Image (tube, rainbow, N blue to C red; front, side, top):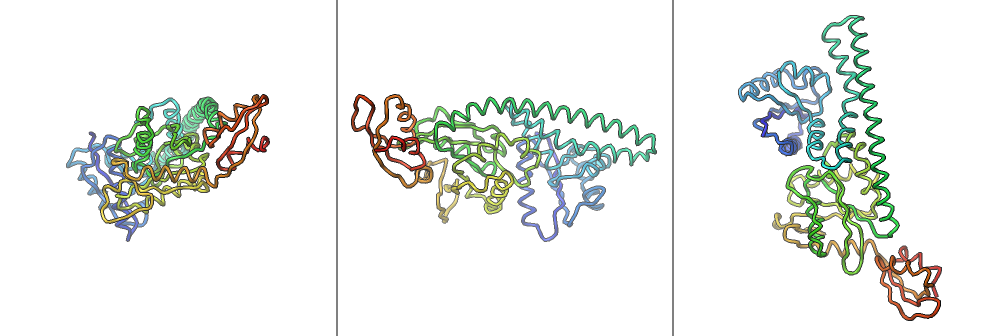
Length: 408
């Protein structure tokens, strides 16, 4: 564990929200392998334009770092590059802001080639506009004249060109991976199976919910990775669920967090695509969380940012075993499995509403329709003749469209 000091300048009259933000940033630090040994806060409406913290608190921070012989300070705020550079010079320690912290977590969690490329892309997109500002600040603080400024601009241009070339290269590599993934995704789409995406604030229990569903449906050997830690999962997991004779695809993907950096949203667009393309979303909420409503709002805002807020959503309140005296609609415990069956029933009734029934005659050369249809429909063969099979088909009309030309 690496010792760090946490620093936060927060708006006036916002102490309660500030405490929640500090706690979350502390958890982000923990996810990075950092140990927060002390926290310095200051209540002001805006950052000091030069050093972020104002003079008195800056001196206090410097003393605390020296007392603990700590070489790293983590800011809950996002810092302009100019402030970050001056703080490094004044404090003589490493300075990490919130976005850099999240990017670092993602780099630690990335396991697949796609995730690693996405994290690198996000890092470069975050750094590119800041590189020019860094050169401007350094040239200005050196008091450089025309010749120095020209040299700095040339150096900055070279670095930016190198960054941009790498960004272009990464996007091409990601597009190739996405093309391969799309082939598999197209097969899933052609299967006509309903697509259910699990969403929610990071560490709310999304992977735990998927594992509880897999356990209940007899697929425990297909469990996905889960850990009580922010951003434990970066990659998308897809599982084929069969429940009460009906089938659907269940997707687990990266969690959301307040002020999720734009660069990560853009870089992880393909990973978030499963959320954007879902027929139904399951919003997992930590019912034991003190700031539950704020985290619900963060998830809903993120859905708006990725243009997925129009998708039907079921709110599911997890960890009810930790909450006494409260009742929740769609309350579950992934630990005890309480409420999981009821949520699955809700999923089926949403994916397969208003069932209809009719008889049809399917020619033998179209018999593949039957095999595919059985995944989402109830099909009962009544009789066979030399041209094909007469059958009764029951299910939602949207899933019965391929059978309509053969309706009797």
